[in-house]
Image (cartoon, rainbow, N blue to C red; front, side, top):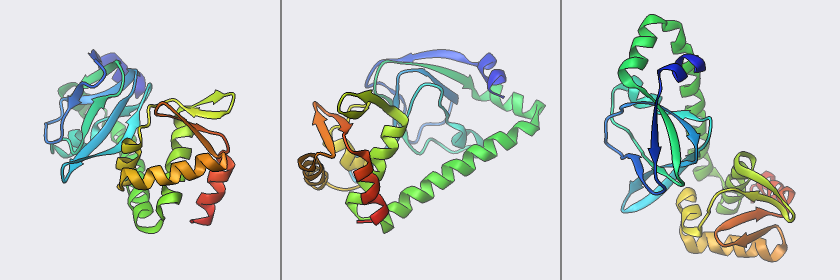
Length: 209
């Protein structure tokens, strides 16, 4: 299916900080990141919350295309980006011609639902240290780069951004990070994060502390 979609795509570029779309806007198509990274987020009670990051090779945007409703999140470029857009009409034509392709979208939606359930389950069941450890380990698995001190997460991670991802305050996140840095588990350098002892974070997560 990927090759069929690539053949229908149109290229688009975004500058760092530019929005591809905002919450409430109607979908124009299905997207793939070619270069750079985007942040999916939403605003609630005058606060920005980060839902996920997407990077090279990632496809997204099928939900509003399939249910006909507006986007439920913002998509903002974290860095300069190159995207591929499969226009809505072309995607609909492809699915009409080959309805068997719907099963691929059904799998993607099922995976997204599992992630959503996991996210809200974590909020309900895990204390902040375990949630924060889990998110840092997930980001390291997706964006980790070898570093002399451990694994560097290849994203800018200001503490306010981490707080938004955790649905908590920056002060609470800062308290945990400083404690972990004192213990030698992590190192923080100019809004970047290095996991020096990821096994310590895994043990904390398993303990549910």
